[in-house]
Length: 289
Length: 158
Ligand SMILES: Cc1cc2nc3c(=O)[nH]c(=O)nc-3n(C[C@H](O)[C@H](O)[C@H](O)COP(=O)(O)OP(=O)(O)OC[C@H]3O[C@@H](n4cnc5c(N)ncnc54)[C@H](O)[C@@H]3O)c2cc1C
Ligand code: FES
Ligand code: FES
Image (cartoon, protein in one colour):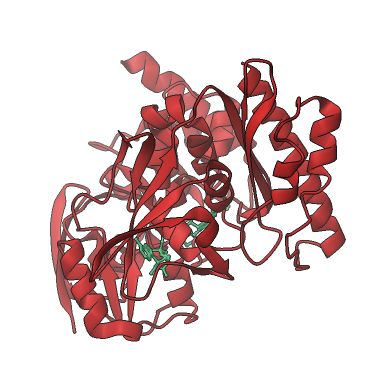
């Protein structure tokens, strides 16, 4: 399959990339790992006249500790996230999430920035990023701005990054105290995308009471969402099995669950509850250590 | 507008002028004439087109040739040395890891990366690492055995 013809640009800096975006506007598309965009171009669902490849821009691929957070460059690949010693030690759920995206070849080229900018409703990383309360750094002609994760996912494949901006960094707050997390999904048997996926991060105080909880759900609706009702059922409580089950029972509330080829609304809502419970059980076990 | 691309494929430098929309797999097969890399699904699902780019397994049907400008590429044709099969190729022979053979070049290139990252893989690791490569014939069991055979042979040679 051949995509429609386009002009290829490989800028050497963010500034140059922003210049090209400003020049070609709607006719341009940014290219990161190409593992969402290229298939769409081959099917001619996307026909950009100009493709701006971010791969040759130095300094967009890194994982480092920076002021109470782990900063991850937008062009960092899923494999780099999966295999990062720093993340495995400080934020293991990110590595574990990256490790179940697609297959090794997809992870070698697909990027965290591409995944979060593309916002596929069945993508894995959005759930984990929501559970961690991450932040996004975008760069545009007027400089950089930070967007909170709750303001990031706007709708079906739509995010807060503006047309004249690049997502340049994702910032994940460091875990404090007794914290544990997990991401679990029911994978589509062919594509490995999440039919439903749930991420949970919980923090406990010395007495074992939950002081903070983040729960993200992906796959079920048109975009990944924070499961607020589940979180509310956890904070301030001792996370025994009954509490976890009662909280997880609300996992489909606030999710605009969509029926599709993978299942009915009822079935996918059920998966939300089951995977939220399993993710919470695993997270609490880890937080207790 | 055509663009110049230059890359090293199995140790040999190639350069051509190509349209930006030319896929890397077609560049390798049609411009360079190495037809060991197959096109199966053409939708980045099956892994028949897997090659190594700068040492990493990638699906060549999901990349443009211009993205590989300057890269070092390895295809199935580059594995055997002086007429001697690579241990992974030998493993597929020994353990009957193929039937029609269509998926085999991609399987073997994926296995190269697998054994580089996990030199003594468990069966579960082998199966997880091959999730991007589909085989419609073998049922995978003999492919797993072939890779186990290769891992043991490569470890013994070290
Ligand atoms: C066979 C297959 C299986 C897959 N399975 C899974 C799976 O199980 N789970 C999963 O989560 N994903 C899966 N994916 C998707 C994969 O993770 C993609 O890599 C990812 O969604 C997009 O990242 P990319 O770097 O490839 O982005 P691209 O495809 O290059 O770009 C995607 C979109 O984001 C925009 N964009 C990219 N980078 C930026 C940036 N820095 N700033 C602003 N906009 C940007 C692009 O313009 C484009 O519109 C799969 C893909 C394939 C091909
Ligand atoms: S032909 Fe490339 S993945 Fe199937
Ligand atoms: S041997 Fe026929 S597809 Fe694998």
